[in-house]
Length: 490
Image (tube, rainbow, N blue to C red; front, side, top):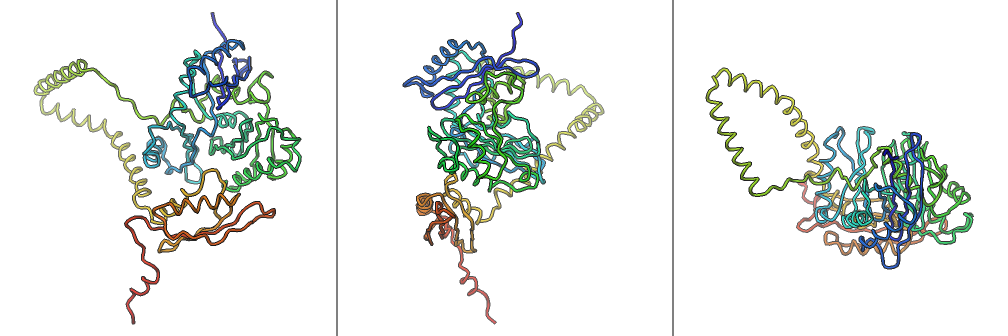
């Protein structure tokens, strides 16, 4: 008997599972059932088998019948970095990103799973969003699904799925804000491709009021969004048509959205249903994320990032037994011997004709191989011939936290690797943390704070300046005075 196609969307957090079952209907989908399971006491991803049994009983009690599912996870389980690729990288993008992973994650690559979202060429450049997740988290999700009797189709980021759940102009920058009980996440969708996803260091209180101007949590949220927007590229196509889409699973309300739009000077649109979902069963919080993932998979669309079917996964080799290897060796030996005897019967003219034909057939392969060699040769100087000041800037970058609590406004690097930089921070402790990290770095010496004072209109930010000398082990830099004294005198 024919049955309707069904797909289950699961949003998994550290404390709950939200499920929505979508059935194909009218060229789109209809939300059939939606429910949320809060983890029982003592049960979580650390015990995937027990959690899978709880999910199985939960789905049975709520009347879910779909066996295929798409899983979405929080951004705090992910590491996302934008990478610039050579122009015209094309099919070599995966190989180039694999080289970058080898350089940046060599020590812990076996503990991470990678995938990427490729973007179109813009202004002669092509970029990709590289996303990594802990392997133990994905193993726990797969074990949970097996215990629940589910077949996992894909594993992606929840906020990235929401970013693609609303139709918009492909040339317009869309900032997608996902608010939920555990916090806030932000994604950037530009020209139809993902360019960023991150967790914002903002805590949403249980009682958020009515969204009035004086809410402190709204001020913190606006400050974090303003900082992210200020770092985005300011192309005319992006800056002029930029908007903020809000998926409110935390009950922020329309008043707070209006106040947020006023603070950011950006149009803010409150979303309540994924495009193509023909049902009210999954309208509004907290079911839109799960519904959008199930709807996209039901329509045959691959997520922007699929950590279950990574395009950067190492190639698997076929393991064969000893008997099979011996049999294959005998077959190969006999084949080679037969070919040798057959080859002796050919005349010189036939041999020359066959060699010419093989050379003609290899022409296209040689052309492709030369193109790959040229691309690798073009990319190699980016890693082997970099200037010393790039290593200096890298050490300074590693001293800064990823949460965006502190940022620089000016940086000066002299020829003798004397560095002076200044900037602002959300608190004095963030500045002292960067100072301690620089002092603990063996490649940095003479770390000195120059000043530390309050800044901003309301004095909530802290302005600072520091200096240090970049002295990697085994290297010294001549001072400018030494260079002048070595010049011949007239």
